[in-house]
Length: 123
Image 1: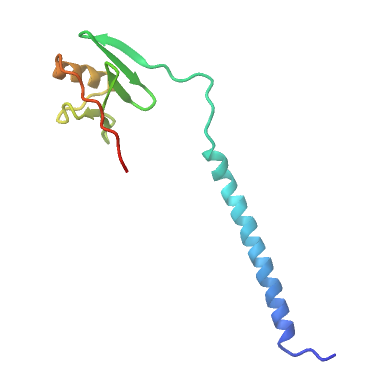
Image 2 (image 1 turned 90 degrees about the vertical axis):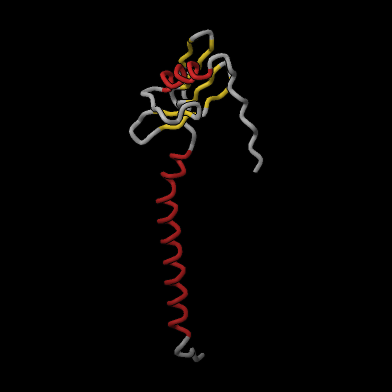
């Protein structure tokens, strides 16, 4: 039986293409595996405790992990500055060293007024 001269290179080419594809896929899987393992949520035995206090008759709760602040159960919008200090929408012209300091200053500014409840986001 006669084989055309094009048959051998095509077979070699197909073999090499398949081998190359398999090698790339194996390398991609090896490279992606650590990333996928790292994305799994880590389990903690105990959640970080909230820092809570009553200041001028208002209940302040600060989550030290997320730096979220609540005054009388209502969220206070907190922003972290590049220098590590914090500011809020109550007084965005002054920054504070910790979220608790910021919460106390917000209570001072609010007086007896309650924080507005956050409007739900509709996307």
